[in-house]
Image (cartoon, rainbow, N blue to C red; front, side, top):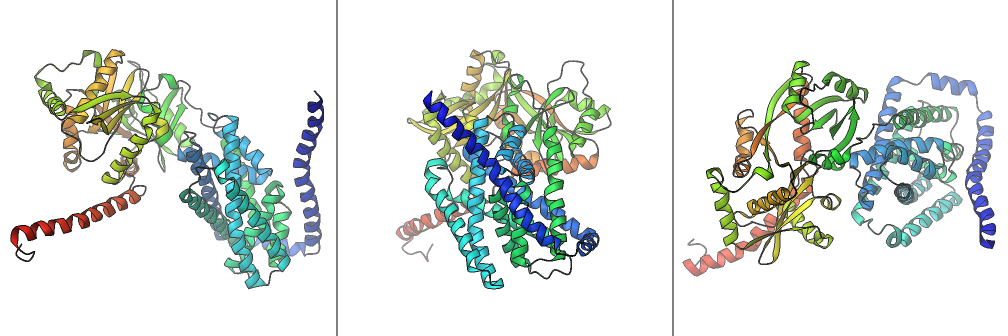
Length: 619
């Protein structure tokens, strides 16, 4: 009791000081800034504002958008580090919204936490607090590194006072030392690669913001862009440390002092605050007040929808739930949609709902009923794929149609293949190693409607190991829904014995039959009768593989409001599935590995030729 009486007043005093200090700093800096502006010609400031061109404002808007998008990537990286299970695009969107609001309202960590908590309601308060603290700390650390460079640049170009350089250097070194000291204690998973990514996005953020300010400066301001960028970095730090709304007072006073700004500079700052702070904060507030309503029946969702955290969102539109994939200009519904017999989906209402979100709605791999509803609404519809579905309770290995599968299973048995289901977390490093080797061999993983290796997702899936001589050489995973299983990953190390994957899938079908699972999906393949021969021929081996299980083939369609949107969305989907940009590093590793293997095998090959033929030249 005695301790609570003494600590309570201290807590109240600490909280009071936390809010009072920014207000005090804002008052002092505001008073100094007001006296500085009062001595200027107000008419000249007004004229400079009125004379700004639309081109300059347009450049500033684009630079502002790039800056906010860059700082939103902080959240995407930290969500991966903290393993929150939030998709990168959703994390980046929430980060952009929270920063747009927090930088305008002030009290950055608190307001950003509240905005993130509103935008990502599936996270707990502790997760959001961790995230906001990590983002703020690492951003200030990266700022400190660039602030040192900026102080040196300004000292060399403008003769910056040694006192300014000493204060900036002391602050920067202090921030860097704090993160280095706390790296293993708080952010142990902040690897060097991720730290470099954070530094890169910080640089993009600050440079784009400085370009927005530079574009808004009237013609009478003769300041080099490099000098303005350096001054902006230092002024930004002053505004962030003051914790005042929009860094008001400290940011403006620092910038005007460093650049000896006059009326034209003040006019540029006013326009900059309007475009960079006020307008994004208003748009972000509108977005956060009316967020997309998440799906309410996750437990009743199809198995495929468990991939939503990787590639999209579960949205509630027009009274029903949708698995919406993330594309640049489209809201794309992925997979078959549950629809009662005789029920007609109002696709026009779905289109209106997606257009309100600024995108065009399309359906990908949708069911025949949904495709028929879209066709009756005047949409352009084409059959693109077929899905292999098995009813485990009615399926058996008997019959002529399964003789190929029985032969494959005999080959696997002769090779000593062993299949076992596992849910032990201790096997995760083994799976991770196999998945990484497979990714290098294949030159990357696919995306969008195709699953990618993710430890958090695998923990919720059914995993079947493929072993030979008591050594795990591969695995397959199934997404699990309330009424179905869906084949997700097939990963292996090197070349598997013939029939190994067939044996693993048969084991999964038998396990599903014991649990009375109505459907097991082996995923989709291009429909040979309705897709170009070039594309279907490339997947002929996959089609033959799935055909060996004698599945039920269900047609799947692609529907869009018109033919142009159909082909544009199809190109965007193909790009998102094959992920050429994301897979560039894996393709580089694949090339390096192949080159190293060729160099390693060449000397042995030459020695063998010498032994057989006497000399390499004779061969």
